[in-house]
Length: 113
Length: 116
Image (cartoon, rainbow over all chains, first blue to last red; front, side, top):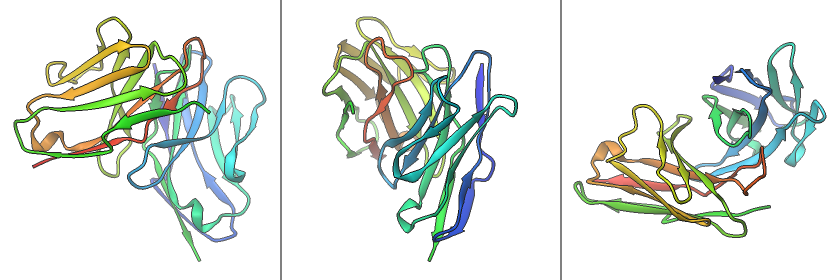
């Protein structure tokens, strides 16, 4: 069984500020972990993924996430927020082959000018 | 990266009609595809796992007679919402994985169904 908890359904930051979106997971097998971004009325775009290689994963658009097994966390960060980062972000966990994903509830990121 | 395409992106239909949504992997073969449903301002909920050449595996609480899934080829899965009602209105998203590629999943653009 696997589950994902995203702490904070809404996060608001100022443009240029640090972005931190939290994700905690549980999985009975070594997990694959993913962060996706979704813009209104669109599908999901993969930001980055952890597949048991390096624990610090760099993704697109300046995002990165660190896998911390001891904390069962995979928080997403970006040093400096941009207006175009405003979107819905989903953390997901997959087990075994990693193809069947369980999604967190999502976090809506708002960026203030 | 690999491309998964859904069609139609938007569909409006009358209550009682059936609607078919297609999910295609454009540049790879997919033995397995997944169908998700997303209600407004909510997360994605897995509806079913579509397996090429065999019956789909439905998640608990998903009516298999309401949501018919067919995966007749390695590049196409279809979701048919039968006798649609307004409560079936939602955003439906498919995903597919290249065969033998663990941890790789590509999502379609989604299909918004509105049932009047």
